[in-house]
Amino acid sequence: MTGAAVRHDPDGVYEVLADLDRPCYIVNRGGRVGTTHHAPAPGSGVTLLAYAAPQPPDGLGSAAFRRHHGIRYAYMAGAMAGGISSTGLVTALARAGYLASFGAAGLPPARIDEALGELERTLGAAGVPYACNLIHSPMAPAQERQCVEACLRHKVRCVEASAFVQLTPDLVRYRVAGLRPGPPGAGPRIENRVVAKVSRTETAELFLRPAPEALVADLVARGLVTAVQGELARTVPMADDITLEADSGGHTDRRPLAVLLPAVIKLRDRLARKSPHPMPARIGAAGGIGTPEAVIAALTLGASYVVTGSINQSAVEAGTSSGVKELLAEAGLADCTMAPAADLFEQGVTVQVLGRGSLFAGHAARLYRLYRDHDSLEALPPEERRMLETRILRRPMETVWKDTAQHLSHHHPDWLQRAKRDPKHRMAMVFRWYLAMASRWATTGEHDRRNDWQIWCGPAMGAFNTWTAGSTLADPTQRHVTTIADHLQRGAAFHARITQLRLAGVRLPASCTHYRLPLTDSAPPRLAVDLPQMATARLP
Image (cartoon, rainbow, N blue to C red; front, side):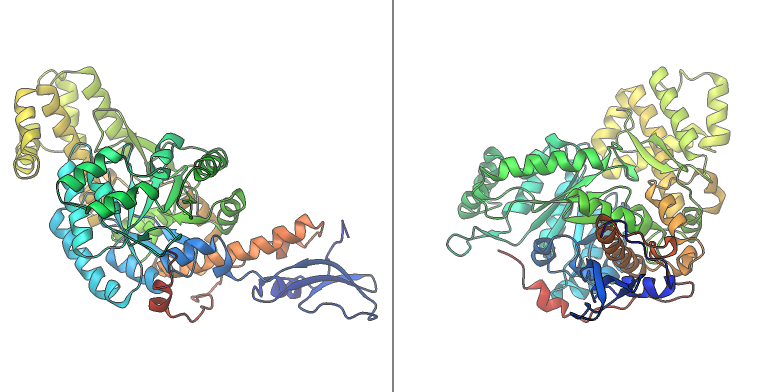
């Protein structure tokens, strides 16, 4: 069989391969090698050379992940901060059978409460699963606490925990407050699910283990969880699922997925042998997921599910400006760069942003160098001060400080008092104003500050643009988030079949080995499904 080459009727070959619900047989009919949906009958003179099984898109990835979350696809749209992962984006994906996370990070408590109330009414009341992002906020723990309280108040049954380097009382409270006794031998019933997003093995291990007993005991003592829940917490890991974040937009360690994923899977399996919980955490893949080939590569490496991020920011439903979406649609593979992060500016932490079409990365890097090399705003050289006020801040520093101080007085009064005592901290707060406003200018489409837009973006965006070039998805106005997800899943299923045949030694025409996107506005066919019914079919 090895070396069989399909040479004839490439359009017919593609049609058979792309019919994902039916088998594909590679056969030899009198010296002509071709494809068919039907197995050759005995005595027909037709020889079977290879076979690719049906591969419907909703069969990719972990069935346990799909059942546990009550969704159709092993696919998640990760949160994008500042509400870029909007309620509209979450609602569209959730109703189509995907898990999507609302981008609560960086939003004021009132807006989070309003958004979660809307999702509770439109999705939660119908039993349709969705998630909310919970970001670790070591500099502002009250924000983390308020987000957890909003999630509990609005019965959010899944949080995507991101940027955690240690477990916090509020995250543990969310997890443990959702534990209930289950049937004998089945382990506790988990009502509050946690999907942890990490990029290091040591952080993954925190979520693969049960919650720290000291934190749980303190929650029990304060009456935030019951004693029964405290006992149940000993038997379940902190997370149901762990998303490994490789080279992504925003905060990223830019770890190679092919190195990180096998290491954490091995760690998970080692710890699972010692765990009383019958269902070990599943491991997913994020960062660089922008094409069908990337999806199937991650699943082949052992990922239970995939998570998309940057590419959803260019979708119609994303809560950002049309100008940002147009810039993202033009991004290439090498158009991303690293820039200082607003939330961890003083520590020199960086985020990955779009470099093409914006001067933000260069401006932000200059601010960090000035912060590193000087002790106060007053110590800045006169030429640097003029440059800041005319080209970057574009207003007097005193005005920036006045606005910043007013904001701090309402949201972080302790930071304000420190800034009044510490000139270097005051300088950091002024420089942070630019970094924070740069994100807001992008999402609102502030045209006068277009050159300063901060757009979180990873290389998946460039890969996605290359894949969609010449198709309807090349147009930002046609990039509906469900259409993106559907085509990624169908394309991944198609490439799974191609891989099957290649491993069997079949050589296919080059024109048949790539999933074809539509050239006109259309979406792939959908499966009819009762989502509320699926949502009640989670594993214990």
